Every structure is written in C-alpha cells, then in structure tokens.
Length: 152
Picture 1 (cartoon, rainbow, N blue to C red):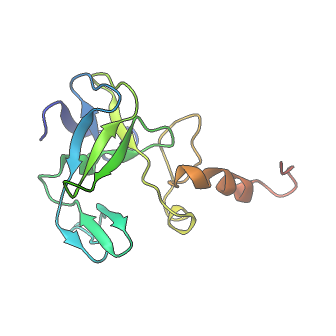
Picture 2: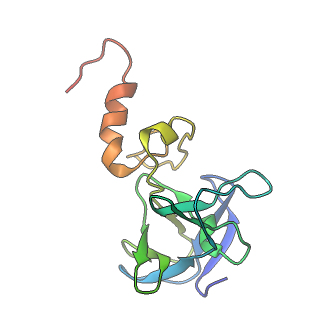
Picture 3: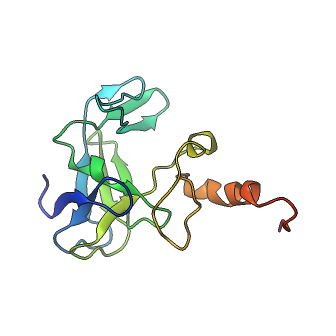
C-alpha cells in the first residue's frame, strides 16, 4: 500500500481508497499498476479493474499490489488518472486538496453504452445517476428526462 492511503469500506461501493494524510493539488497519490493486455480482464470474482490506456492497450489492475484499484468513481472526483508516457504508468493525482479521511475518487470515463449497465452511487449533487465520462453527462441527462419534460 502506498504511503498516505488505505482501503476500507466505502459508502459509494464496496471498498474505497481513503487518504490518511493531506494531498496537495497536483500531487501523485498512488500508481495504477498491473500487466498490460489487449482487452479488459475480469478478476476471479468477476470484477473488472482494467483501464483502457489507448485503443487496444489495457492495464489489468486486479492485482493485490494495486492499491489504486479501490478508488471509486465520482461525478465530482477529487483525483484524476494521469498517464505518464515517459514512465509508462498511470497515477491517481489530486485534482484539489484531499484531507485525511476523505475518499479518493476519479471519473472512470465510461462511454454512454458502458454507463447504461453501471448506476452511480457517488452521492454528489452533480451525479448523473450512471457512471459516465464528464463530457457525456449532459447528453445522458437529456436522454433520461421523463417524457413530456422540456428540453433546453
């Protein structure tokens, strides 16, 4: 486990990643590590911890040594996954100050199709109700409006 984080039960989903110290904006929190693969890989319990780095390149983050795999999605995340091309590694990096005890979250960046099978339980006032990439949330909200409501 990287210094400054721990995993424990989360109100969002299952286990979460929590800060045990202050993280400044832009500070690296934990690497998202694992072997590379050409397709997403499911862990033995059926959970998927794979991240698509570019088309056809995935990182299988299901290994026990990957603490970042416990970071949950949020529609108002306090971290982001930053790919360091020089290192060939992804890092959870603070988007804003994170205080001890706060859950570390990031935007999973799911497509519209992926989002339909994944409800979001982040609890943010900005929650779209589905795990979906930030740029797609407005379109999702327009499509999910009840019939007869006004479209802007």
